[in-house]
Length: 497
Image (cartoon, rainbow, N blue to C red; front, side, top):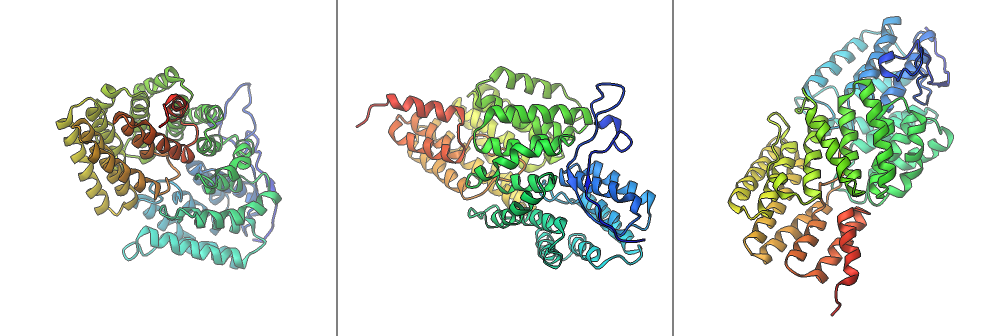
């Protein structure tokens, strides 16, 4: 074996591309385009192109396809230690929920055990593997977060020891994003990641991971504008990956660029459907539903939800699938103030607690807005129970979300009972708590921001002049949300004192 380095533009011909993954418009499928990746490894030289392709897939979160590609490298070269690393990396979904479950942990640990049987590799490769071992060991002694932090620190050392290794820098930036605390509104980790990625982007404009992770770093109100260039380019860099077609909409959503979000997610949905990736298809459909509603294209949003309801066999225990399948009908009902439909929302029987909470919140809110306070109170009680269960499971972020949803529901119940003072206090508390936490990368954000709901509540209390600042504050965090903008526009007709 020997070391070599080759910069490979990952545009594979039909030999390397699975026909089912591409749109066959003629007798031959179109070339696969995943971007440009260089990851030199001490494996069979004939497999360098395929290894680079596998890493490109990894950077676009095409995890199942990445695993297959790394295994193809292993078939051709069973002694390739870094291909075992790649397979284990394909199980570690750093920005997804959950990043690693029990089954993935077991598979990744087994893969790295196989890696240990491989012959000696370079010092650099040993560093990559040792860093990942920190994620796949000591689960009985350390929480996943502790292991993720240990991996991030180790990748910082790998990148420092290999300053000319672009991949080391990129994977360190991803690790920083994966460990960014949701409570850190200064976005310290995101800014560190951007400091790494921006100069790399200038030197490697076709690298899929750099553009991808810049979008994730900027997926917050403070930094969204900084991610716009990467958002516009990523889908062009790796159009064969459905996730690359979808990701720009994270920035478009943050900036209220709804037409761009629609175009992004329509393309992502088509590609995911063609490739049989139901999770990515539903993820795009959720963002698409949100964007349609913000444009007032309610009939198209309703048609999308109707299509969802015709899908069978959805694995709603999977967070990505379950969240989208739950959130879409909730968005449709709540954004249109269709409280009767909201009151009939039913959570999937096998959905995770954090997903169930979205459905229960919609049901409680709908009932409260219809004046059915006893029924709403029962649903609010379920939210409190879900919060406790989530805390016991160590899901502190989602427990806090359930607590916020519970306070919102209780506020609407108090309003229905004509206790305006209690209603405002509860909703203001919910808004303050919500704004102290950053959203996770998996969702566009809350169904309706708590601050915006506070504005509606104050309007119900016939206090439009107090309501307007709440809408304006909400729009600073979530620009161009349709209903809040309509209120803001109509405020010009509110008599001033």
